Image 1: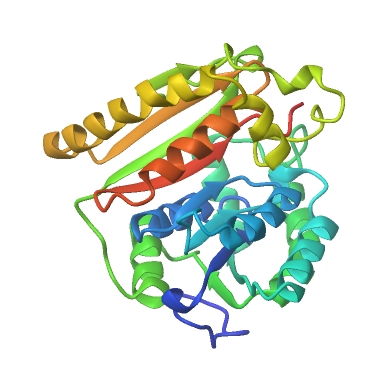
Image 2: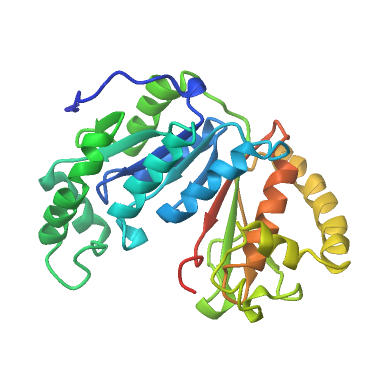
Length: 301
């Protein structure tokens, strides 16, 4: 394995509250977030930088139950660099020192991976893949220099990368748990294809029609309060959460290792995120489940 050593001194995961995973497209960020998920971390994939800032408030909330989290943030977030670097600075000034894990791979390896999967590079959707790879490498250079841990995945399979992260950063392996993904989405953008269960929460009050709330998301307290006002949300949770408390151990007993619950509203920004966060908080204390949250459409408006 070829790997960078600048820098290599990094605290072990149990001393780190927040891990920010970033790096080259095709370098293995999906495998990395899965390793942290299996290690008991609260995980969010493809989280825009401005939404990472909200995690600081989440950690400080006494009843959140979140002690360790890992998020993936990369060029899929659009206007990326200045936002993420500033968020990292802001979190550090607030006393929450995130660990930045940067994944990279050699140009030829990345090119081969893209050819094998026939995917388009996010920075070259209509052009040559190699141009996107080179543009991304240049764009990410300041963040690589900021990283606490750099891993070169050129010679690693997905399983080997997960094993390396487990050994070097997690220091333990947690098995026998149900990996539960809460996937929020907007019906106007189409339902997800990979959901095991789908919840339609469009019956709840819609913040989209409130001018002050429209630009916010379900991660904002004002939006959550609006969505959960009245009796509908309480009655819904009163039926839904006991059902999940029944289903989760049943799936575990059946030997199921992964479960995706999709939560949808019209746009995927307000009600779905609110409900997904409520489910996450309810299941956070369970020892037989690892919860991961992914907001598919939060940035689409």
